[in-house]
Length: 254
Image (cartoon, rainbow, N blue to C red):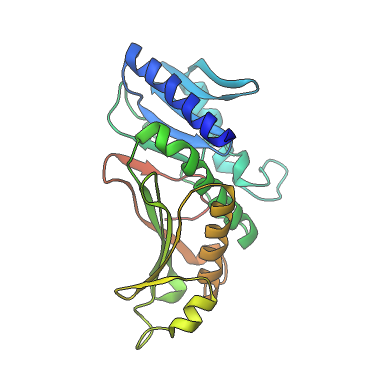
């Protein structure tokens, strides 16, 4: 119920601001709420989650973005200037759809998660955020990406999240002659064969679904030979093929 109330509140505030000044430059969000921006080179109006709820605040664009770039640049890890987990980063995802203003010329390059635990946490945080934030910001559009496993001939584990589709995890099994036996795939948590792929569906994105999907994806990547997050890449990152979607909080390099 709390998640639904948060989504409804974000939608109401977003709609009110859009009615007044127009669509945002950047949709987006972090582990604790939305991060929606109306951006010009000089000023940025930011809708995000404050201590007492949703808040609108004005910032000097250069100062805000320089601080965020520095935090992303330090990355996630155990260093003295790093954050311990992706959930503490300024935001996890950002989507540009030609709204008011202009997008930044420099965007966070992202980082590579230092270990499997923190990759799984980053993935869970992103999927959980999408389950709460996508419906309010982009309606029925689904967001998706592929994690490319370089240790498995670039075969992918795909993830898709949307209001209609729910949360879906897929794995490319076409490299196995004859396909992996169904009982083996089902034993690892996969449900449905689909033209050389297998998929598992989580009907309602939320904390438990996000955690289970992240565990399934990471376990499959490791089973198929990935030794560390360094062996992974990102591909086919999109939100209904509209605009430019970036995932600087995910912990996977390009």
